[in-house]
Amino acid sequence: MKEQAVNYYVNQGYSCAESVIKAASDAGLCPKELLSCATAFSGGMASGCVCGAVAAAQIINGYNFGRENSKGNEVMARANAAKIVEEFKKRNKVTCCRVLSKGFEGAERKAHCSKFVSDACEILEELLKVKV
Image: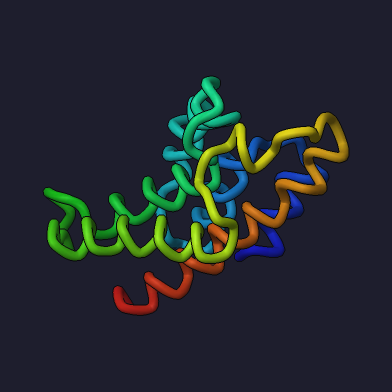
């Protein structure tokens, strides 16, 4: 999933959040309709706050474990949410888009941020193993 997400991000014009959702959809982890939701999470929700790749991982986590899902487990959804943030911070120190991408623009930013897309996918895939 991570290779496909990075490809969507670097080569196909999708944002970080959209790339994670699109690759997850391709892998059967969420419906393709969630892609449009991810657009608003690009660039730290246009404010520079939470990395869009992290936000997308949280959307997929919520889709798989959230309230009113046939497999819903609110406790697991919240525990996974914390794990996503914790593991991402372990790898990258912060989840703030503005901090993660500071000093990078254009193609250089895409190349730099592709690591965060990859990390979010890896973390998500590990957590969703529990679901299967």
